[in-house]
Length: 323
Image (cartoon, rainbow, N blue to C red; front, side, top):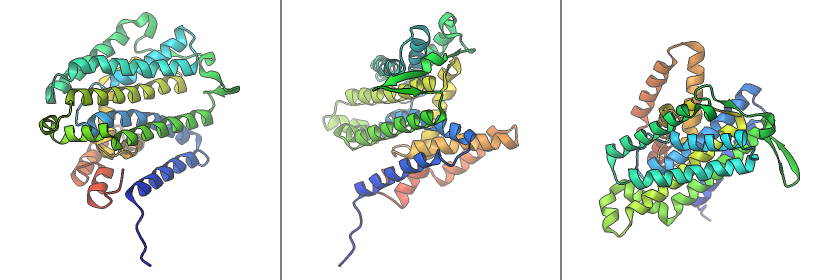
């Protein structure tokens, strides 16, 4: 009796389960420093998965995604700090703020294409960044705000949740990452996701086939903005700090690098890219002050040998079932 290979969807699901199980198990073996680092990386990976929806699947290169991360960060953080909102309400407010901002920005920016779209998103992001510096009475600009202890605990179905506990932070970050990956996988397999890919490959042909490309791109931007804002809101509430640096263009570039490194258009690519980029900078900075040069050389080599990103190249050459 011949052995039948597992269906691609089953293989992909098994890979997801294995990755999630590995991340869950890591908290029990990692030292405190690396456990905190992985917690941060998982939140940043959520940010990268949001960026991947727009860039990897829809083909829209944005340099303004820091404004969505910042929208979630500041909405959640300021509502918790100044208005006394609880953690669930503050987090939900951050996600809604990111989605609404994406809707407003999309109505303007998506009327442009190519380099023009990139520049318009950069301009919007710069306005958002300058706003965090202008309203220093509320944001304290570069100095930022530290959330009080009272803003980092809440009751959930009768149980007390304390965000200062490292294990709680770790597992909530993992839960958010699981939800983000499930959302991206669901979108990628949906009719809307297939329309996004069609636009990425050839927008005029997609339009000719009857797709409302503006509406599809707007949906992609709203989903992307909401996921990015969720990462920002989680970062503020989990690590108790909000500052203008999180809305700077560097965070937009970081999301782009995570996605390019891991593989745009692959579900797990941005997660791998976030881990590799974070530790590449972390390890290089321990040995030399020119760590950015080392990081740059490593990225050039990766682009030369993995032109579609690591998982993207592996999928293209050897494992086509990778999600």
